[in-house]
Image (cartoon, rainbow, N blue to C red):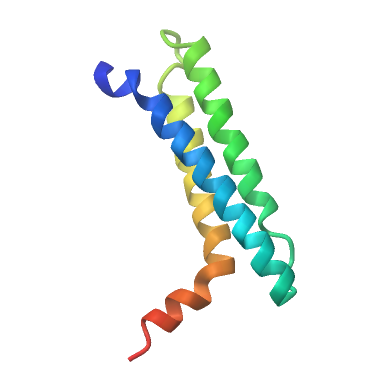
Length: 98
């Protein structure tokens, strides 16, 4: 378990960069299709992952060291998935058409 925690910051950086990239693309798509600005949720989820990393770094051995950051990461992932699905769900339905 400690080996995973040592390199978890790499996954955090990758998740934040992916959320920022998807938010940029979603903003452009939303402007073209006149969709409400749900892409801002992706900025909040990227910030939530940064907060989870910070909490884990500061409180590494305390009671907040494992459970709270993992909960924040999982919640941010679910919310980011739902926001992304709001913008890009049409692509999935086109892909699944017979």
